[in-house]
Image 1 (cartoon, rainbow, N blue to C red):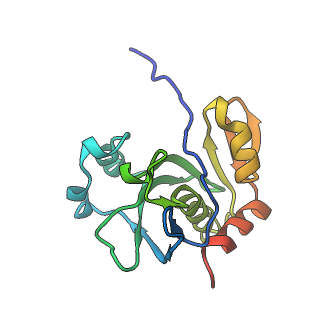
Image 2: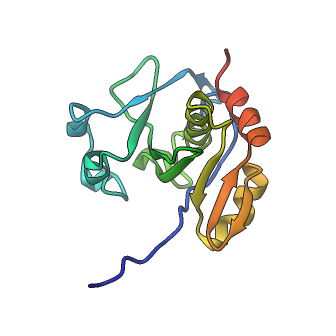
Length: 174
């Protein structure tokens, strides 16, 4: 049996914003993050996403969340897949929508918003914001600088409570 190659996440934190911000105008849009349901699945076109989100949605150990703007909840800005590990949250996948990638992206702040939400789920579950994920080795330093994540060993990184609280307060006002 072929062993599945373990690869790390390769999302870029383009900018930590207060929500998501239009790259051309600087206009900020309020966002909403809700659980992706099988009803939402028809919005997910395989050609528009790097990862197989429909397969991810079928995995009952994972929770998939979508980021949308409050004014336009039908357009998915990004997705994140997380799992409750009983003492922390593990982030399996994170992806900005096709139009929020590269130099011509529409919005800044999508990945930061999704990571902050994963930290918030960790707090809500009583895990103090602990969030773990595997990073591509070339991006470990980027996550240390942008998210204040800690490199554990190999590809494994984690966000500690103090860094998680900063991220959560950046994106989610109580």
